[in-house]
Amino acid sequence: MQVSMSTSSNQPPEITYNRPGRPFGVTIIGALEIIAGIIGILSAGFIFLASGISGAIAGGFAGGVAGFLAGLFFGGLAFIIGLITLAVGVGLLRGRGWAWTVAVIISFISILIGVFDVAGGSIKAFSLGFLGSDIFGGLASVAISLVVLLYLYRPHVKAFFSKG
Image (cartoon, rainbow, N blue to C red; front, side, top):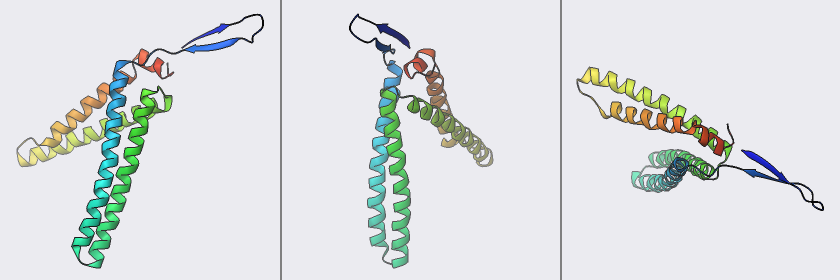
């Protein structure tokens, strides 16, 4: 970030901050986060709707209430995650430092989950004798999260978020 000051005889000094323009990769990551957030919010609505319908179909009071409460919990969780993801996407597009931090944390968590998916898939593959989708899904998750993480740590990207 560059700081420049201009002065004139009658005016107080004016300070302007020159931040680099948004990198194209940040635009892609931010847009994908926004799309994922919208999908999460829509999924929450579907979960709410499905739990209400399944509760009505279940017939029994206990089964209907349990299904409804489970749908309320998981739908609420999906809604909150969707809102957070949407906010991170908008924050990334606007160059907010907190969004960079959350994206880095999410990338680390995704790498850990992917490693556990690969390990679990390997155990299953060994015991069942074939490679399952857990291994490939875990590897894809690790690869994508690692690329995002490495990109977010590039100097020009960190400069955009005022992190470097």
